[in-house]
Length: 268
Image (tube, rainbow, N blue to C red; front, top):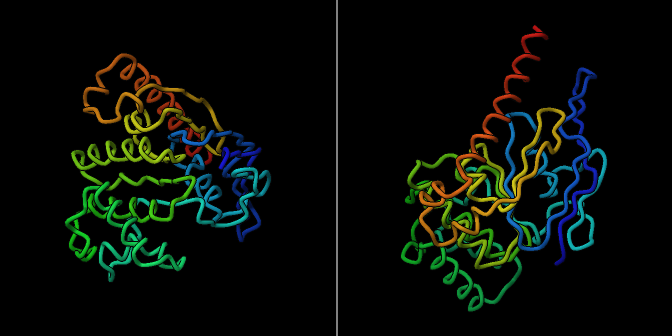
C-alpha cells in the first residue's frame, strides 16, 4: 500500500425540512504509509464524519478518498475501525472475537490460531482467550477490539474516541499500547479524540479542525509519539515543548467553543 489521500472532501447533510448542514468543507490531506495522525476539534467540527468517510460508511458530497491509488467507495478490509465502545460480539469468547475476520475469510484453523495467539499476547490478554467478553473490564474489551481489528491486517487503522470511556489509569496504559502497536505493526493510524493531551501523545501529526463547516485549521508535527514508545507517558508530558503546545491548542479550541456559543446566542 502507498499513502492515503483525502482530496478536497466536502460533506453536506440535507434535512427533511429542506435545510442542510455543511459538516465538512474542502478538507485535503495526504498521509504516508505508517504515519500516526490524531484529530482534535470542538464538538460538531466533523471529526467523526471525516472518519466515517475514510471508513467508507459515508460517501462525501464532493471530493474523493484514495488509498494506494484506489478510490474508497465503501467499507473494505484494508481499513479497520475501532469504536469508542468495543462493538464486540458479547455472545462469543475473546478468542472468537479476535479471529472473526480471518474465519469469515476462510483462513485455515491453524493459521487463524497462530494469528490470534500472537495478537492476544501482544495486547496482554493471552490468558483470557476463553473468557466471555462480558467478563472483561472496559479497558480489556478495548484491547480485544484492537486485536480484532489487527487480525484482519488492515493497512489503515481508524480509531473513533477508542479510549474516551476509560478511567485515567487504564486510559494511560492503553495509550502506551496504541503507541507500541503503531511502532510494531507499521500501520497507518488515524485517531479521533477530544483530549488535547491524548492527541499530543498519540499524534506524530496532529490536526486541529475548525467548527462547522469542518475544515483543517492548523496542523502540527510533533515528537511526543516517538518519545512515548516504550516510555513512561507521564515523563513525556513533562518533556520540552509538551505543556506549551498543549496550552496553545487548548486556547485555540476554547476560542472556537466561545465562537460557537456566540453563534447560538445570536440565533436565539
